[in-house]
Length: 115
Image (tube, rainbow, N blue to C red; front, side):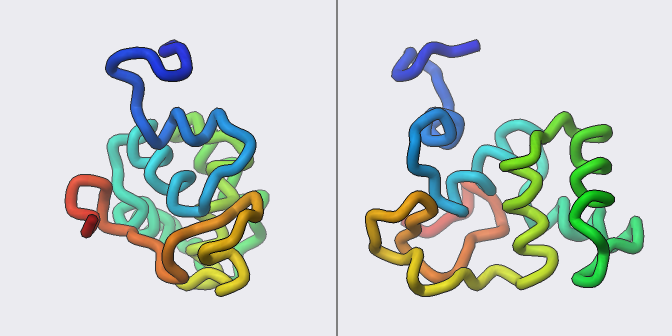
């Protein structure tokens, strides 16, 4: 496992180790861990019949069993599955734990994310 700040370390995973991690950083780390974009995982969840009314525990069990994702990362995806890509504006531009730069999460992968 890469040391914090080590050469070649993934930035999303690095942010995940810090005390403050945005929702977007969780989604970026999920992509790094699974090789699938959040949108691809949401499509797979839909194929399994998971939707907004599915209990989080069922989704978390699937993500752990098939992709080795823990609760924190899994809950970020559960949030998007249940609520869509918009997050509460109170998390935008704040100093809170889940602060983000935008109220819309990018689901199409790190490589295609606008800068």
